[in-house]
Length: 234
Image (cartoon, rainbow, N blue to C red; front, side, top):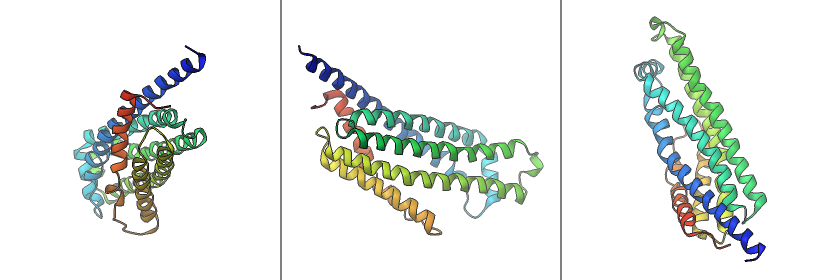
């Protein structure tokens, strides 16, 4: 066995392991992120009614804390995914693969920073007496922190969308993944970017295009597991 053959197999094993790691992390994120956002945060918010929102959080503080914890887990998983996908697609284009990884890390940093606003909500409630829970001032402060969290995440999703577009290009260029998958991933990224820009520029934007363009992200998980099991061509 030549040195080139040995090196090739070593690289192949490394990419297979990275593919499985990325697939597992993305699958976990697909489960945890909706629970954290929709299950533990969003459903507590009553638009236009800070008092009702405050009441919901106070009565479901355990769930609210769990949501914050899950967001932090998702952020850690995002870092793992950025590293693993860099390894998987470095053969397609090392520079672009690194760029895609950095975009995802920037998005993760924004998400983690935005999560601090949820900690501020807990701090506000924890430092106030029960008699203050229903005051308009406290409710307004809580709603401000929740809106700041959402605004920060919306900005982060703009970067995340750019990450998916670059990743989609890498998938298209790869010999190990179908080109249609790369196109679908890029479309998913475009959906996130349109929604983020819409929320930033248009008051009351509510199209949620990304809810209909995410199929590429789901299929990517499948193909990562498939490549992790079957191996890579190069």
